[in-house]
Amino acid sequence: MDAAIAPAIAMNLPWAAGIGNHDQEGTLSREGVMRHLVGMKNTLSRFNPEGVEIDGFGNYNLEVGGVEGTLLANKSVLNMYFLDSGDYSTVPSIPGYGWIKASQEAWFRKTSSSLQKNYTNEEPRQKEPAPALAYFHIPLPEFSSFTASNFTGVKQEGISSPSINSGFFTTMVEAGDVKAAFIGHDHLNDFCGKLTGIQLCYAGGFGYHAYGKAGWSRRARVVSVQLEKTGTGEWQGVKSIKTWKRLDDQHLTTIDSEVLWNRGSNEPQLI
Image 1 (cartoon, helix red, strand yellow):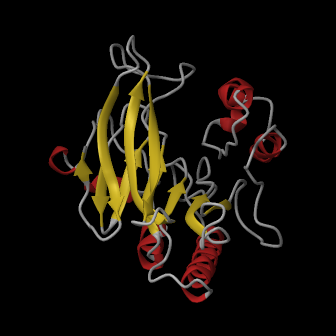
Image 2: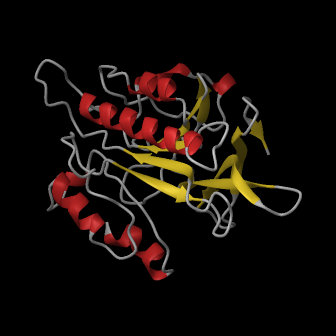
């Protein structure tokens, strides 16, 4: 774990992390892993929201402020939600992987609603909510909705989602601010597909400590957010959200560049 974060710390960069379904298989419990993460240098990770009874560890949100010196300097122009999707079911009659629980969905709904009201109702008022990104580990059942004809990337193994659908995808759709959700878990999948206005994206296998596929390079998904700029040079809110994957090959190749979200546009674009 320390080795994974070491490059960000060495470069003095802020970083954030959540936990997956295997992290408790070492010497620390899931709670212990998250407490270790929030104690590391330059971390923006949080253990859980204060004063909230919530399942799991590492449920938190980050607010990305506007450019200093602009009208949006004190507003969050991009919101990021991190949720613990658990490890394995604790209900004897339900086998398989864990899922995002009702307490987490309730926290998400309340947080999203509050952020949207602040952005659109408080001065300077904005016409629409700030976009948001969601990060968790285990794929939702909705990740099975795609075929090779309607996603960018590859699907080389089955979608290992929970055996029940707890409804978190519907919760995100109803909230309206999440434009893309990013997950891991299935190391040989790296696709993005759009469903009901939300891009559902795999990260692709990254570390060498877990299974992969011979001849298929390890990879990291990069997400880049661009701000709007007026004709007079004033920075505004988010204009677009782009993504691509960087391969760990001889040339550090970039593949599958695409626009996940454009303000005023509903269609993804390859770039």
